[in-house]
Image (cartoon, rainbow, N blue to C red; front, side):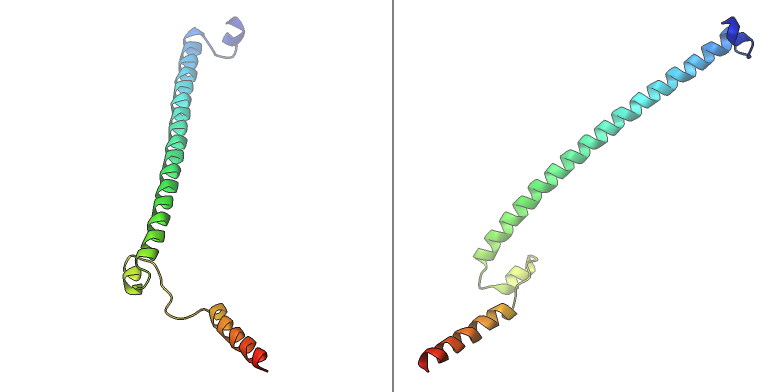
Length: 105
């Protein structure tokens, strides 16, 4: 204590500084607990979102089968439905026609 007294730290000032350090330590512990809670909440939210995503995917699969010929109803629930053939689908019919013509020749 006498060594610090030369630098202006008497017993009262040391006690005040110790109290500040303890207050800081408590605030730090509170912040770390809040971080842990926030991380846990994020993990819970991610898990809930993954479960919801799985259920939506399952719902959409069922809806696509149930509403196979009703493209407008699919679009009402947010599923985009093709109204024309894709490039690959058009190529298949052209290739089949070419194969039939080659067999006849």
